[in-house]
Length: 201
Length: 427
Figure 1: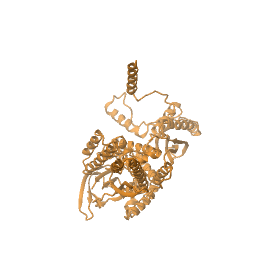
Figure 2: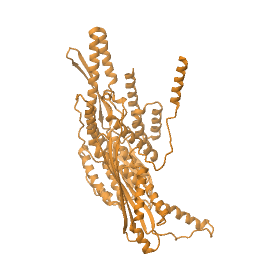
Figure 3: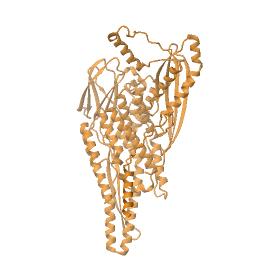
Figure 4: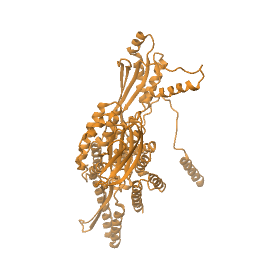
């Protein structure tokens, strides 16, 4: 009996020791996961959602449609990262592109980086594609507006670094390419208070 | 035995650090990388020394041209330093009584700052100026926070020392700006069409040079050439050169025989780490090109002098800890020997001797540090004509003789906005 108990305990310990330490769960992408306190997908989503709904509801869109009788053509430019973290600002701009395209109210054209590849492809088509399928040169749609912006942050921390406050400001602007007129501006502020746990050392 | 073994590992690590420094100094980065891997295999760098391993790996990869890998190692070092600092703040007083070598190395504040310098250069090499600017901002922030951070450390220890045995305070930090970070930021802002930010960074650069002139006793005039960095069209090449080595931590031992109240002699040993500057043979660095007159590169940041200055501000905390630890150990062993002596005189004597041996073996200054960090950073910009340019970087002695020279070829085209050439001579 004594040996049976000891053997069970030993096996129990062995199996506990052998259990993989990594556990992975699939979760809803819209679920908030704040792990390090740094800028994350939740922040990017909050900014995009607010910016998109505001941009599509402001007068610049109706004014353009009324004057030009066609949806505006927008190019998404660079959102500069002016924080102390490495932030992929494309997450925000791609979300905005997606929302603009899906709304049907705004036409989006390829960004400057994307254009290089497309132009190269078109150039090669002139030489290698059949006449029926070859795409014509100089038929690009010129943008009416460019979307640019920046993300900046202010960081404040206690001397022991256990409490950290980060204040992010995301500014986005839509500028008329022909007149330089700013037709839409919005900013979103996010303030985070990060309290680090007590460590045992 | 445990004490002896712990002390033994610290000496092994000291030797390994010296070997790595010598290997890196010789410029054989492949050998340095292999050496580092060997140390890891032989557990010379243990988990408590992970910050060191990542700092060394980051710099070796940087000068080997593996910029992605370098940034990964520096990222890891930065994260570990941050984590270890928070842990060191929340440790109990008991941890103060343990030999510093057994604790997790949380990086010197200057190491935490200069890792961002090399990360920013990694990103410039990769033409990711936005990311490079993130790193210069981190550097500037850490420099500004230095004084607060050291005071925070002193306050944390004071709180843990509930009996108020010691007076916990940090020294004065006489430097709050990094010329390196502001110089690079001035250039990158200028090149990315942000003249206002560039101008602000330039003003901070002037302050940083003034601060460095004070601590390094060297005059740093603001030349026309320096002013030119605000004009993005006046240059297409940034030359960065590094010379010298990181300051060296050395152990200084103090042994005292004191008379106790009951006539017993009281033995105390203190081992304190002190920092010594490496005396570089390089006095100036000159650049020769096919098309331009010879140009001296500007000594921008005396990383070694800044490091020493920052370390000096932390020294009172290190010394107070060592004093507290040594006194506690000495008091403990004397009390034990005295108690035993009352029952058995011979055994008491033996305990006394063992106490002395215990102090001798367990008291060892923490000499861990980033060995491959260079001592001085030099920077200049120049405008090269389109085409293939041959460049020679000459490291000169005080008498003007060439101690080392390196030739590079660089292709400048109409598309070149800013190219970076980096060179190092560690003597």
